[in-house]
Length: 392
Image (cartoon, rainbow, N blue to C red):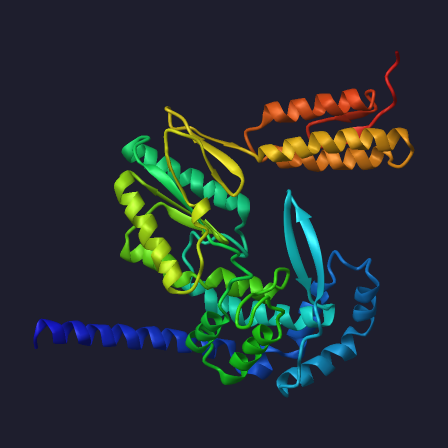
């Protein structure tokens, strides 16, 4: 047997083993009747009501959850289920405008079941560990923790030599190619009934262009988009052999001790994304030496000469907080806002900056709040609270 034949035989064995593992994962889910059993759908319907029971629609949904779950399960298994029209609104989050499409709570019950019972068990084995968004036990601050660990690992071996490159995908959700998601369904969801239900969620989702776009605010959409670049993630980790690499949603970072090699890696990754039809925002792709501060997900990281990693929160948030406190002062004087509302806002601001090395910013915000409201709001270590006015 020649070398080529041995390589081909080994490839076929590995291919068969991968297919067997995929089939075993699908078989572990069971048929559609077991995946979407009444007990599971009822439990996910209860989960959908958490923290939104003050809404009238949620109260109506929970009041008829026993009979409504049976009706929706019957329509789902018969292939008659079609989601209702989403509620579209604009959310201003930390200075960024985000269009949100919120599904009706009756659809959220089935979409949560699709996400938790089908997508998560089948998608998670193919994800790299350093994919942090929309995964249980992970999140934004876990991404910061992992980046600090990688910088420490790099410093112990190379010092501050090299740099970090950040790659940002352009309009990740609105520009998503749905054909890539359908292709992923065909590869991983081998049950035709489950595959048809997962395709229905994508077919009926609002889009900005034909064949493109997934909405924000929909749970299956989050799982689909977080797993869509998995092929590129594994290519970076395995084929390129990059140890210090990860991403939170559409924000990627790669750390390398050689700046020239890092530049070549960044160009190769950009070409790989564009070959799959995933546009990259080249204006936001930036290579920064580790001797200088850099930003990741609006947080500023600084690797000092001693190897310490200093993480500062978003500077724009302090500016917004100062402007809001001055506005609240005017509204309080006019009787339009209470001190309890201002104290709640200060509690949220202080809790945000306690996650970073921003003790100085916390002190300045506390002093400003104390001065604006004549000492009636006092900020402790845990929260802000209203106290009696100080004497003149």
